Amino acid sequence: MQLSKAEEQLMQLLWKHKRAIMKDLIEAYPKPKPATTTIATLLKRMQDKGFVEYKQEGRSREYFPLVKKKDYFSKQVNGLIKSFFNNDTAQFASFFTQETNLTKAQLEELKKIIDSEIKKKK
Amino acid sequence: MQLSKAEEQLMQLLWKHKRAIMKDLIEAYPKPKPATTTIATLLKRMQDKGFVEYKQEGRSREYFPLVKKKDYFSKQVNGLIKSFFNNDTAQFASFFTQETNLTKAQLEELKKIIDSEIKKKK
DNA sequence: AATATTATTCTACATTTGTAGAGTAATAAA
DNA sequence: TTTATTACTCTACAAATGTAGAATAATATT
Image: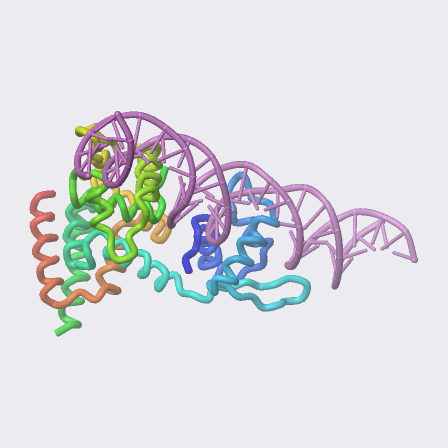
């Protein structure tokens, strides 16, 4: 099952905090902070979906992510690549490189990374 | 406004066909083809959202996309980069390069593309 | 102890989404 | 022209989502 938009936003906060009680999470929200009950609902749903767990800590709970941000992100990107490039990762990569506004310096940087990846693969 | 999952899937078909009447679209669906009315509903909603338009062609309509696949895709990727990498495209790029299973050949290929991009920027 | 504060759960409700039947108009076939 | 077929629109409805008030339990204040 997937996280909805609102859930994903909250997940980002959790990833950032590593572990957090509801209070912290709400504080982390910008301007029109949602009601505590809203967050409570989201956390509960995220638990049901298996993305979050908590540990009772005194009177409150310390929530923490069950899935790594990296893994979640990878899944997202792969989903995109799958539907838009028919799973051809390389095609995506070249598209990305050409369509994104990376500066020359960033491109150089990227090239360096790719080079070291190539070496690793060897 | 955004396309929902089902709408996006239909959009992919439209992008592939360039222009198509409902019949073609339904045919393009795999195994458990949705009811015609389902597709009709989706097309209507997509119109409301401004992603699709049609031209009456005899007794049926020829539907066509109003947004380019490329643009739509870019927006998706940028959304991801924004929420996961705080808008740091380069960081995303390096992450992508390291986490994706590109073969050595694909990496070489990508490197070539990046090189030509670098030259373009120069 | 009586009361206020917190942290959660329960319930609720408006939207959005996925799916499709019923109805209708236009056209084609008998 | 009577009937069947097509191509839609309208209406419907269950599930998922976004949001939050009311109720409750546990704890902290007065």
